[in-house]
Image 1: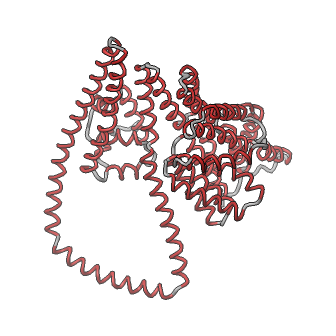
Image 2: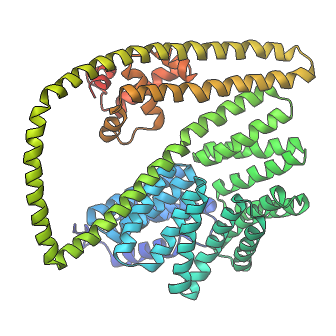
Image 3: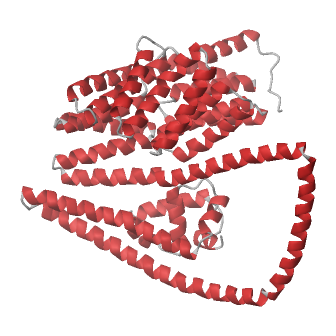
Amino acid sequence: MKSSRVNKKQPQIVWLIAFLLVYLGISGQPRAQDVIKLDSLQGILNTAKQDTIRYKTLMAIAELYNGIDYEKSLSLVRQARELAVENDWKKHIARGDVAIGNICIFKGDYKSAATHFFEALKYYESVDDKDGLASINNNLGATFDRLQEFDKALEYYFKSQNLINQYGTNKRKSEVLPSLYNNIANIYQSKADPVSALQYYEKALALTATSQSIRDKTTQGKVLNNIGKLYLNDLKQPEKAISYLEKGLKVREELGDSGEVARSLIFLSDFFLQTKQYEKSRAHVLRALEIGKEIGSLDVLKHASDCHWQLENTMGRYREALVAHQFHKKITDSIQNQQATSEITKLQLQYDFEKAEKARELKSEQSRFRYLTTIVILSSLLVVAVLLTLFIRTKARQTELKRKNLAQDIEIKNKELTTNVMYLVRKNELINSVAERLLPLQRNTSSENKKIIQDIIIDLQREGDNDSWKEFELRFNQVHSEFYSTLRKLYPDLSPADEKLCAFLRLNMSSKEIAAITQQSIKSVEVARSRLRKKLNLTNTSSNLVTHLANL
């Protein structure tokens, strides 16, 4: 274990003040108004010599930024976690994983959230930390909830509930159960069971009604919002819905949590849209979009932009509706829920496999019989290997012939793929051209036909968005089956958009062709290529980007 850096001349009183600020100074005040506290913590961070103090201070400052600036909060937590890794503080590493996972959920990055949650889960199981296991199962439930894996989410939520009820103290139950009940209610609401959902929401609200702690107030704001949404969409009682939604917004504004305020504004915008109060709806959703951009939350931007384009379309503002719909599509593609679901499944399978492997290793150490069995198996494998060697030699010529045939097939498929890409480029150019030509017609036609033309434009947009990439990716994987796996192994931090660009460049496509198939400007593609060079560590080198990707 790496030892902490200690300055023996540092007065003990400074250490004590730092300790009190970190442990006692991060609760009880709205974070957006806590400027004095932030300045004090920043001063401690700048002068601290001990890694323990630096870790605690970084985590405390990150907590102040959480809900106000997700990127800043995430950067601070990662710095704290790196300190914990350097000193081999396993408990603090797990704490950092949980904090990073929670921020990633709010940002809409569910793949990263699940990765860190599973790492924390391994640690809590290794030390049999019941409280930690309860919390991390709750977090995993929330991740699967966002991915609409509702049965899987309930499985983790009930695991958390059982651990709390079996091992938790009364204080622990009061801290965790309100949030957990709210999460379970969310699942029942998503599964179209409003009666069960309302029961769990009311349980959570009852536990937080008289509390003034930030934790319970935060949960209270969520529950009030969710009950309002339930009354609006499922129970069809708008007069009750608006009461709960406005109470929820008030609680969140008092806390100063920008992310949660934005979510309340989205729910209220949806309420005013459904009750045909369009200007109020527009004012709320525009404010939510502004907050989402400020704090860098893809999740907020996704739901706000969805509400925005539906509102503009309902109001007959078709040009604004088209712009809003395109922005919503861009945000939705960035989140890549489908890919995140697949990656989380892989993580869970890997976690289960590693757990089973440890159990088998322990049993192997306790049993000499298994050792003898292994010797027998190895001997058998040796015999099989000899037989396989003889068989492989007889098949060598056939294998070489198949290899040559395969190379010829790949060359033919490459030509077909290039032809297909050019077809997609021309198709998207045609779709965009038709959509642009329809817009002037829309302004000069009757109000009755405006909606019909608008629907045609959106259908054309969807046709270009949905089919082009899927068809290209299918054909590309048939020809270059190992390209993506090699790329992700060498450069694991690439985004889905970066991977798409790499595939196009692998086929030696020009920026103009890429812009046509992705419906971006040529300038945007050139900027993306420049950023990709930096991510592939090709900046300030003579290496050609296309050549580099072709050699992977």
